[in-house]
Image (cartoon, rainbow, N blue to C red):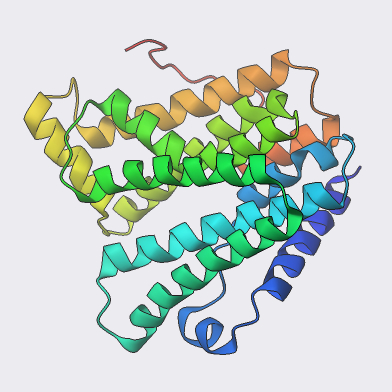
Length: 262
């Protein structure tokens, strides 16, 4: 499978998801659902890498993508406060997507997967609440919190369909994306509740360095570890691996001097 075919397959999945979300008013005012390329890549990773893939796999993957869209819509409101019409409609969009993914899963009659994802959503929601409820914890604990938020539903999808061998790539890749996103906000002079939580925790616990320095170091560490795993693993095909390298701007010859253990 070439990188062009991989890109086309991801685009096809995105189109199918958008076809499921046909509420014109919500899409007009709240925008399209959050369908990040890297999440779709990881949902499709077993297919892209040559594993058996059927209609149940695809429909379940679409349901998981809609879960992330719902959670993302609710996050936008917590960051901005729902005051304008578009923001209030974004609240409704989050609720709409939430109902939609349960409806999709119910049609599959897959009770085990529904139970797993539902329990996971509770865990994710608790972790997200810690970001907005002035919880203070160590930098390492915050990284674990963010990793759960970003990857748990995809990990549960993998576990259910016996694709657990792909979990390390999804966990690390999605964490890399979130850290890079937060650092980009800093460059743009924009704040987030996660940054505020890190700053409050730094003040409370006295991190070894500032949260911003630690976040930059963590990004370098995670990218370096991802490259090491890709170099040492024979699991992914060349094209699937190269797509992942390009997705996160990794470099095969990149040497990063970081502390492996804090």
